[in-house]
Every structure is written in C-alpha cells, then in structure tokens.
Image (spheres, rainbow, N blue to C red):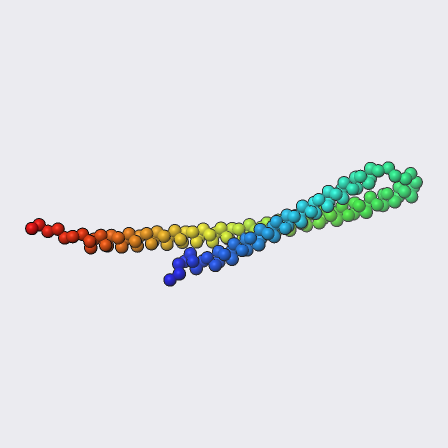
Amino acid sequence: MTSRANRLQPAADVARERQETAMQRLAEQQQRVAKAEQQLAELRRYREEYADTSGGVSVTALLNRRQFVERIDQVIAQQTTEVARQHRQLDHVRSQWHDAHSRERALGSVIDRYREQERQSEDRREQAEIDERMQHRRPARGWS
C-alpha cells in the first residue's frame, strides 16, 4: 500500500514546477520593469540635455527646438505609462508567484507531517513487535 505522503508527492512536484515557472516569470518581469525605467530615465536626461543646449538664434530654430522638445515630452509620457503598466504586471506576476510558493510550501508541510506520522506509526509497530518477542522469550521461572 502506498503511503499518503507518497500519493501526494506528484502533486508536490507539480506545485514545485509551477512555483519555479512563476519565479522565472517574476525575474523576467523585473527585468522588463528595470529596462522600461532605464529607458524613461534616458529620455528624461536627453530632454534635459537638449532643452539646455543653446542653438540657433532664429525664430525658426527656436520653433523647431520647441516642437522637438514637445515630441520628446510625448514620448516621455508614453514611456511613463509603459513603466506604470510594467509595474502593474510585476505586481500581478509577483502575486502569482506568491500563490504558487504558498501552495508548494503547504503541500510540503502536509507531506512532511504525513511522513512524520508514518515514521511514528512504524516506530510504535516495531516497539510492539519487540515487546511481543520479549514476552515470549522470557523463560518461565519455576521454583523447584
């Protein structure tokens, strides 16, 4: 007969695999967030550098510069939205990992408890066998 712990082991293996997959997805999402944040920081730096440079003095040059800065501002706004979206996705993936991790730990705890109960039961059975043998081994002492 298969023990309860052994019957649960396949479920624990699946839970471990799911937790590992979720952990991998979490790491990948963290990288995407970092990349999006880095791109946003670079855009902001570029805008500051471009806005600070003094270029042509003509009205046309000033208008072109202003239009270009406005386009950069639009891209920064889009990237800010992307960073926020990536953070929401990160929160979602982190939640999935946490759930998978909790399930894996719970199954592991149940299996450990079942194994401990099985070990204790086996110990009691062995002790009962030893006690039984010891009772039958004792020579009958009679007074002669």
